[in-house]
Image 1 (cartoon, one colour):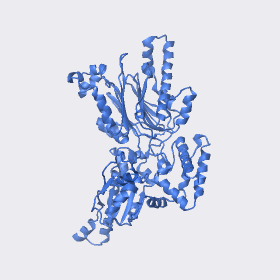
Image 2 (spheres, rainbow, N blue to C red):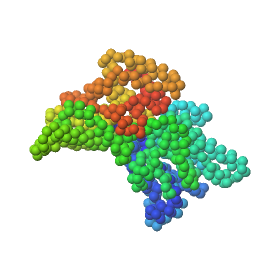
Image 3 (cartoon, rainbow, N blue to C red):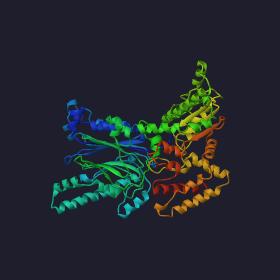
Image 4 (cartoon, one colour):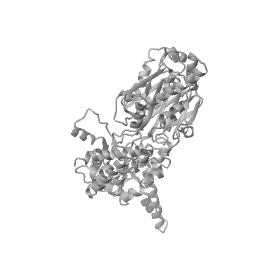
Length: 629
């Protein structure tokens, strides 16, 4: 996978359903929830290395005592930092006091019943501790306190911002995260006030009103009124100061969420194997939250599933399966293997059917599973060849004949090694580029020079910078007869707007190659026509907007674009022939049939906001590159 692609965020939530004393007796520590949150976050570290945060809520705290706690930190070591900060609160306590759950519940911070955690990868370019989740909205009424975190990117922040300001609100920051906090907080305030009016109508007073409100707040109302107008992919998990906990998935099913519950706890995470490993569960124990569905846990621990928003699509992100999620999930592992195996025949064509003189490898580390699938495909191919050779002999084969035939095997080697991580203090361009070329190292002597083809598989090719700056240059040192670079994903042609940092068209090597082909073939009218079509499209009601950028790819075949990409990415001085092999769209859906979200590859965005933004992206590109010509 390309460097500098910022992935999805990760969320985690644990709601303890028993008193802390229960976990002290059964598991030897009241910190059971805290420890499990740490594990869930570490198991999702792949989803966010820019920052991390966690929050905790104590139920039934007395006035004058803090009951909602939060820690946040930036950087790849943020998880260690925030949990280290939490544990500093317990240093100096005697073992007896530290194991006293009643004392902890009353006196110690982060000794509570609800925990939420977040791993952050920015999708907006905004950074700093103030952008690290969870976000917190304070109020003297417990029920009006709100803390939430999420894996999301909203495409219509401008519309929601206008809605808030029309109500008289004045958000401090223009970002989907803060606007969502303010809007949800506003709806929570209204829900509390609704119950306040109801309690007053029943002639309640003082603390009696407070108890009534806390017992009757409906987060389903808050979520429905908050999220109905949002366009984007999201999983949002959070809690109120009075003890309501929730997780909601977007109605298109774009971003993933999984949960498990028993009589001790309710837990949520962005990935299924996280829950399996942390809580020693089987696959069938873990359930997936459905599109538009929320898991709601009330203050008394009652847990329900509720359809908050009507399902609007079946567009679970296929890129989750190819790259972002952990490959330890049983289904994802099988899917990635199949993606590799399906490429057997295109690869065979690329090496002129010369499997005997072809070495197979992969670009570490996320392409490893697809690599195993690719090897399986060639093992099956060679086995079929062996059977045919034996059958064609027409007689009982001799030992020597059998040995000759059976000695045909798939030649696989560990060719590329991920060697170092560049440090950002090196800023001078030439120096940095030279160091970038050494991010990978190779196994010398693994290829017979000028005789062996080298096939190397990656999970995807996005910008192509890693190929150009490092991989092709260093593979060329082995002097293979030909290099075939294989992508287990189809050509990535379009930006993502639902939680992954790929917003600009010009960042994609496929787009850049296509634009170059248009210029070479004197088809500039395609660019102008697409620009005008995009502008006209943005005049329509948002629900009617279509993706007009798809037109630029129509004049060319995948093979033509591949050839141009090779020409653009080939390092200066490299003489080894290079060919690209991409997964097909049909192959993608065959391997991953239940995750139909393929907008990166096809431009078929599941929401109106995606279509609007991709048209705007082309307008921005055109006006930047062509307007002044």
